[in-house]
Length: 586
Ligand code: AGP
Image: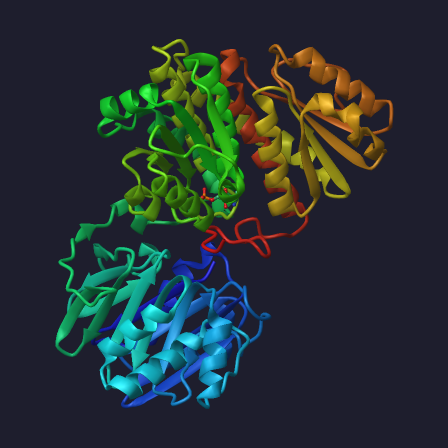
């Protein structure tokens, strides 16, 4: 998703901005741009491609000036081209802006401004911000007033940063993250702490409906009513500042291998105010779980575990669907909101809706500085460290660990996971990566992959198929094994591969039935199981653990299969096409 960054200080701004944008590349983008203020002139350079490529061709880093803004764009309104790339300048060229989010009423604003003589160069929704600021500045003569008036006109979600010819940098946020970094006589503004974490660990997390003005006389934070806000300065966690691939070729591979330790970190992390949180969870009348993509699959597993062990019915809901569902998110409900980033617009939307209805929020989140964390009454931290690869890997197994812990606590330890055993078993699966790589070789040419699992293994099948889709670019579908005969069997032929998530538990023999049905139609079968069966064309062995704990182990070979297939296909698994790590649009 789009990343925005700004700098005002005494050093050349462009180099700092370009480095910050590189640090945030993991969020996903298609084009790049920078504006700097040099003397009383705003210069803008922007183009399509990776930060390094555009920097090389347009010499972004060499731009002069100590005040600047930068952007990486993930196209929503308007095609991928340099005109639609940010920054966008106002018609007077005296204001330049970068924006993350969506201005829902941009068409009516554009129409109004066109009527007043303004000209629009791009197809973006964002360009209206620059021209509205110009209009309001010309009307009021005050930057502060121009921003407040502009904010009162914008609908949708946004974080934007603007530079003004007079030397002021300003920013505002509504439903999109924006953080201020405080350096030695320097200010940084960014959508992600990684944008400035090389320079300072002192940060102010701007609240929703807050804006900041930074000029020659210092910094002023206001709410959207123009009232001053007393900011809280937070120290950024050290681990957020160190993201390196180390000995690994890709972040995704590093993060898959980290799971042997991240599982334990999540298992051992203290829960703040856990007694109150557990009481609230056990006493609530209606319990819901929500998440998007991978995090939704964790919600499905959570629902299964809470029902089975804690005898607590907990309905899983896809975050983007919550707005359309008939539900009872009222003051008798608790919503467990699961998210790696804590910034996905869909989950924040679901949380807002739940809070409006009076429900209480328990977040399960990796980023302790995220909007979701701040929106929740209680939070369970994943503590698995920054996840850079777009495909969620270690955050998923940590989310599962959090769900197991919750089920254990709420059931009076009817399930009592031995996470050390699980971590050792994960190490064993990882030590088998060479064999998994060989199996991935055969997947490269396959047109479709089906991943089958029953019961608690069905969400793992969904998660495995999501990994294959997003980083291997192969059509993949997760299915409950029993559904094969109700339709998908029509699709089985010799170029199809089917992965069975099939440990030796109550689902085992039923899942094997599906394997026979597939084999009879020429499909290839890869079995992920702790027991061998000669129906498998390839067998990925996982260790035997307590029945309930298999899902964590099964996830790892599926991640490795997706990773190695992407490498075979020369896809960059860290930055798959069209996808973003943190999806901040709805
Ligand atoms: C998973 O591999 C995906 N990248 C995606 O489905 C992701 O899990 C989803 O966008 C939710 O993100 P979040 O956990 O940060 O909210």
